[in-house]
Length: 406
Image 1 (tube, helix red, strand yellow):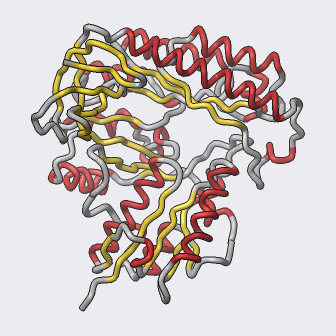
Image 2 (image 1 turned 120 degrees about the vertical axis):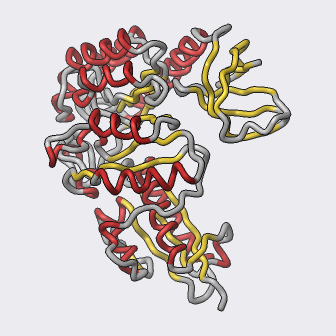
């Protein structure tokens, strides 16, 4: 009997990529294998993103393309955040991750785990879902629901699988990863300690985290397990104007942000701090933007992820009228993108003639490319097979976005 085939399209965050791996892994257990050819697939599964209008538009475009190009009798399945927020009634099946697993008759889908992880050299492990914050611009909390944590036994079971598959680095992710464990009066530091003790040969990296979730206990844990917990934090800022932060309903002020992140910078050696900035929030004036720009300029960020504000239906900010024209917003985005390039180069220069620990992943034109413990891309010339190997290398130069090692 010929095996059924599934083709996967994923948009958005690391959590979405984890969710796709979860579907893929569970379908393989019931005999539905992955294909790289959309036109030979029996099922086309699109995992959508709704974080911005563009992400939603790209997800819908992929859906229309799949409906046009699929073979006869193939079924198109639409899941992810767009499917959770609105019913499009275009795909053969639309619904949540759990709904998709039910569609394929996966037993007990609420408790499903990844049985095999095929993508990349660095794995992603989702430990938390949903969000209890009420940021005025965000539709993801509407799509994902209230915060809930994955039980430790399920996390350890998935980690065993990742360990047995030979992974050496795992990204710990969630919609609000710092909320892990609240149901049981536990916290993220407790979980990371368990992971570091159970898997002492593995490196762990955190996905995006709120400043309020970075406690003294968490920082001290990084000092206790420097080989396991990687010196890299992505700590979302969004704006350095307290007025805009209040309008966004972010749960901190710029003073709180600075105090917490400076503590991380002072305690963890060579730590990389990245952040997210939303430009053009409806109430952001020129003065507000200058506060953000100047803060980012003087603060030792190693990179910025810059997003243009995108109105999301169903959110409080959707009904606000913008105080500046769109062309000004575009100018602000360009200014921050250019600043980000300068910040990244500034951070990279710190490591010239120094040694970095790198997990190598891909090979091209005589060079292996990998990711350092502090999240820098490194190229290393070698004929040796370095795939999935961690090596300490000496940095000699910078070429575009890469450190070049010998």
